Length: 441
Image 1: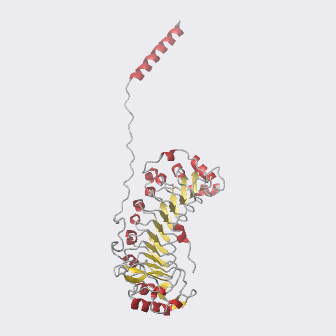
Image 2: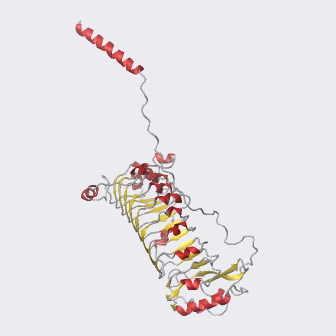
Image 3: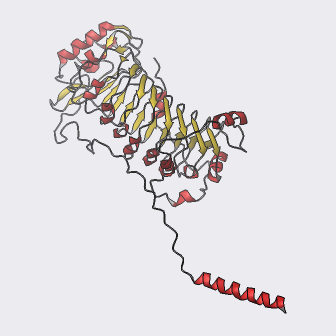
């Protein structure tokens, strides 16, 4: 009888307290404030778009005249004189340019391009194309170009032009392309080139320019900026993100320090950016994730470290990513591997430790290369001793909390496994990588 009474009492008390507990109103758990990303970087300079025309389009211009009968020629005496001076200084001309530089009609000279000069409405020298001429001699670029007042295009890669550009080129009112790559230029950055304010294409690669680059370079309104394969050094200026360049190569120099946070300010324009082959260090700023129009992002062969920011999941147009030969670590973010245009992502020779299902799928499709990392279960990884040595030292990033920020609304495709095949996309054809190939000299 007693056990039955005790059991009944326990059952009654248990039921009572259970009902009492259920009927009580508990205070709601504290809510965490939402994590808001820092404000997106903004440019500190403004650019006019669409670009204003080089001349009034309402002008009724003389149609382009035939080279053998151009009519009156603008600045004839001046151009003939400087051409003959250049000819005397050329000691090697394997393609026989200078043999055609005779007579009074410079439109017939090899490498000279004539067209109508808008503000004079007569034929003038509109372009120079000496690309690949392989001239030898002591050739002063500035002395030559300053005597070509109507020039619009100056292409002279793979020659022996040199000399200091000691004054601005602002007097060249129509010039919009300059290619001086693979010449013999030395010294500091030629800031006076930036005096030609209509330039949309600037190519100074494969010279021997050295030292720092000026802040004014990234406030300069151009579409293409190639300064790779020089000897530039020191840090990239903090106003880097002001550049409106669509195609930007700073590769294969000696730049040091971190990638400026301001890079995110270039989100409306930056399409391809090559920073490989420098001595950049530190962790990647999450602001890179704002570059939602970039198709190519290359920081290979630097001294960068840290995890990949989750913000990379916002780079929805990214096709080619190179982060190889650095010191990155941590898991490879799944949001990166879910990007809809991922075609060739190279993360080899780092210290990544984990990949998820979507990343493994890209590995099988040979779109993601994670060789020489520290990922257990995958082939071609670093040795255990190598990984242990690396992780034996504490690793941290400045602004570590920002690495988890995703400053966009990820598309639904970013939350599910994509069904991709090797035949899904046409292989991308980036433009900037051609700038890394040295023109034949």
